[in-house]
Image 1 (spheres, rainbow, N blue to C red):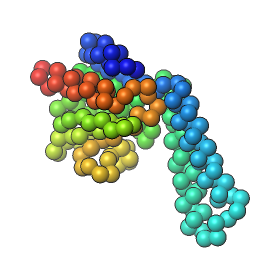
Image 2: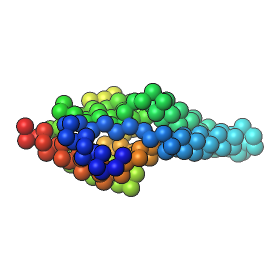
Image 3: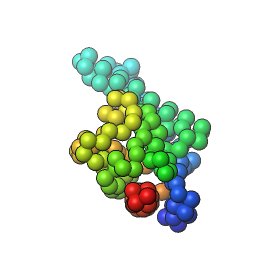
Image 4: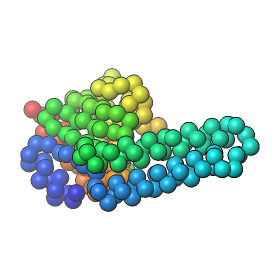
Length: 171
């Protein structure tokens, strides 16, 4: 999705960000291959220490889960991020999470993700596990949305979301 497509969506008072087919296939293939490699490290030649096998087995299970969830979301056409008048809804691989516009302080773009910084005291609507899994490791009150599987640059998305936030905060 190009910046012009986001600008066209802004005229409709919403943004819907979906998985791109080619990127999703590449992401799922890479993650599942990595999971298979780690899983085989547990099964074929034992590492010698039980905690090595436990770590590799756990990492393989998490990677396999992420790969399958992203593939299923892409096949079912589930939007990764939806922004409308009521707020922002994120369908991450760890579960759905939503927040109102008045809870959002700012948006920033990374290389392959956007960060949604929340205002002091604001809590997104989600399960505890989803809030923990989507939280930034480095910044407090920040939700990170990975965009590996979308065809859109994070800068364009952050600009579009900032424009929507300005529009709905003013209303």
